[in-house]
Length: 523
Image 1 (tube, helix red, strand yellow):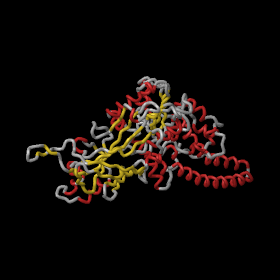
Image 2 (cartoon, helix red, strand yellow; image 1 turned 90 degrees about the vertical axis):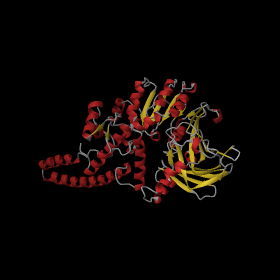
Image 3 (cartoon, one colour; image 1 turned 60 degrees about the horizontal axis):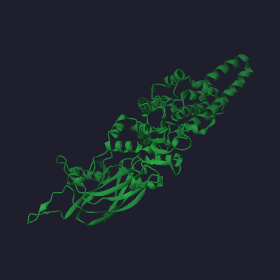
Image 4 (cartoon, helix red, strand yellow; image 1 turned 45 degrees about the horizontal axis):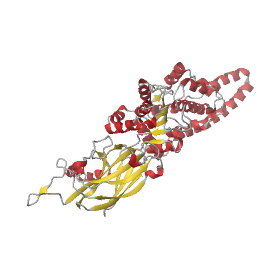
């Protein structure tokens, strides 16, 4: 089957032609893909489209078919069941406009759908009409002219459909947003990011402890953003009766294999989808689940905005009054840093680079959040303030943008070298110099509805006073280092908002003491 045009072929080359049935196999051409569907699954797509009982043009029936199959497979339906419905001319999906929306971002197959067979039919009809005589030939010429006009209208409709699906030109902002979202999910298709998370000892210990408690036994569990499926496996081994593991990235085929290898396939159903695109929970689950687990945290806690998806799942499917959120809370902390080493490395470095003045480059570390490992003993030079607490049972998406005050008190770093006075006695520093504000988070696991934050015994803590995690810490360098007397308190505010061009990125606005607000991006 031919692609629509050279332009569409080029677009398809950038995005792979992925198997409709979730195997992860990528095909070089649409002919190869549709041939695989017929040979392996018994889906004769052309025959199904031709037989469909709907008034839409064939082009739109193809769109419905592709999106129906992808959506059904993502929802965990068996391939044979999907093919049965896809080849039923009276199936409701043929006329359901929901299946005009693509399931895969930038689905290359939707830009390479087959052309109609009208040209062949026209040629055959013309030959028959000529044989039947001049009158029939004239009538057929009129019909062909009308058909040409209709085909021209169809091309306009096709362009509009492709525009709606994101395959044609759309507003630049929408293109950027779609690409950012697609890039986000593609990034989680690579094994490297999962390796990093799985090697994070603090992360794995906290989630394993939380998902191995007696509170999980006999429960139904929804794992949002399951990745390799390890949290789902923890739940299954703890006695969960059914687990639905949802992930939109292409790690899913490996996830299914991992689950099968570990003997959990009877308990865990893996669905490849954005959680927001799922109309219902797959069998055997009903309209709700007992537990929602997710490792949604990003740098600075809220980077990547995955918590939005967890909130969506909670509001739609968590059992009212009895359902459990894992983790249950999240807290953001701040403290001041005194670190000549960091200041020299990130800021003063630009003053002389091989005898070249690059001071103009200083604005970069001054305007961007810097993510790296901070040593609490040698770097923290103030008390710690809890900036904000999120209750995962009640927080809403609108609550994820906020401004919060804080007050911190200057104190020597734990590793500060002490001087001796004239009597030989050790004396602490009288003042400290703050070079940056450090931010980190923790996520307590209050296992049991009604258990308070203070009662939780499991906590994933990214504090700089503990061994580092893959989240590290987030630093905001001050424009000018601030000298503060030991024991003196300084107040300020931190505002956290979404980046206007990409909601997965964050903007932090810091006010410290009398200084003017400084804005930092996290991209």
